[in-house]
Amino acid sequence: MSDSVKYLLDETRIPKHWYNLVADLPSPPPPVLHPGTLKPVGPDDLAPLFPMSLIMQEVSRDREIEIPEPVRDVYRQWRPSPLFRARRLEKVLQTPARIYYKYEGVSPVGSHKPNTAVAQAFYNREAGVRKITTETGAGQWGSSLAFAGALFGIEVLVFMVRVSYNQKPYRRIFMETFGARCVASPSMETNYGRSVLAHTPDSNGSLGIAISEAVEVAASRDDTKYALGSVLNHVLLHQTVIGQEAIAQMEMANDYPDIIVGCTGGGSNFAGIAFPFIGAGLRGGRKARIIAVEPAACPSLTRGVYAYDFGDTGRMTPLTKMYTLGSSFMPPGFHAGGLRYHGMAPLVSHLKELGIIEARAPQQVSCFEAGVLFARAEGIVPAPEANHAVKGAIDEAVRCKEEGVSKAILFNLCGHGHFDMQAYQDYFAGTLVDSTYSDAELAMALAGLPSVPD
Image 1 (cartoon, rainbow, N blue to C red):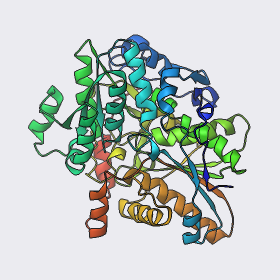
Image 2 (image 1 turned 135 degrees about the horizontal axis):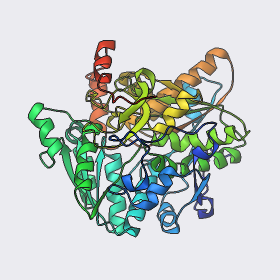
Image 3 (image 1 turned 45 degrees about the vertical axis):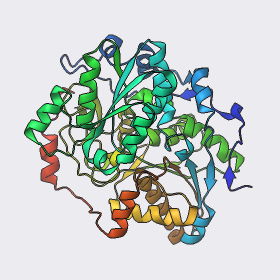
Image 4 (image 1 turned 90 degrees about the vertical axis):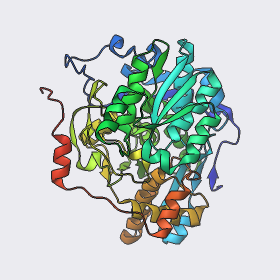
């Protein structure tokens, strides 16, 4: 068996449908609520932000949703993505575990994000939308939407979290190369951005703030819609091409994962790798342990509460029930910028509440240590976000060694770190700082949760 389990240009292997986990859940997720009425939102409530095709995907309970051929045509540029057996890493760790990783860094922008960016740009183009606004943390999502906007002739405006904007200038240039405009958030271009800067002139920004700015612009223009790179059901849906391919590739390898690991910020790449396997287990198939690994500096699943909250800091979005640290939570400027979000995707949160998945929150220095170990063994430098999945997989492989058992471990290497050399430079210089929060600080951030009757 080749260590690279790939379909080698066989485009018939690209999934023809996205998989919707909602169809197989033992209980439906709580509804999304209108912040004014506290009643479930309807399609018309979301129409100012999204085209109706995406709204219908957001509320769908169908198990399969057909992937439009123009979207699959773009997917052909990098899908199916390869699945590798990490034999050299296994040897370094001296573990009996069989470690596999699905590598999404082969996409044009180097991450899993185009799986949904291409779909969202297509549906917006079909609806006659001329401009899309969005936010981005580390820049992978902004880069992906810029790429997709160029393909479908849509203008893209990206509000990039200021700390990442300063840390990763090449990501901004990458977006601009595709024709997008990238603005540091908080900015002077929106009412909400100006209000944040008036109160905190040196604000590092957050994904919650950037979402507020992007939503404000989209809601104020008839020709503009908003696109989100994670969290929402339709975004997670589009990512399930990852797990569907992985199921087929593991079958080609004559193996099946006992453990599946993904890094989690908003939940999109985690859902992409895990949801198809979870669904197979819920339908009576073999079950795997599913582990979500989030940063200790932004620990929504491990230290947050399961409650209704706003998806943005400016409180412009509907209320979703999720594990949250509070929409006012301001994470520090750690290098895994794509994981600096106060809440977790409602579907991922629902799985945690049902006990279907586990969650862990390691510190960033230990994650970079794992990423460097992986890079020196496998030859791929992971993105800082992906280092959390690498850390989770290595921890499980070490446990297999300690217990003397052989298990198959699968993780999603959601992107490469070629634009994140400053982060690695800081790691090697010993200047990375691990951040922790007191219970009092977390309680303060959660004190502003909206009051929603049971």
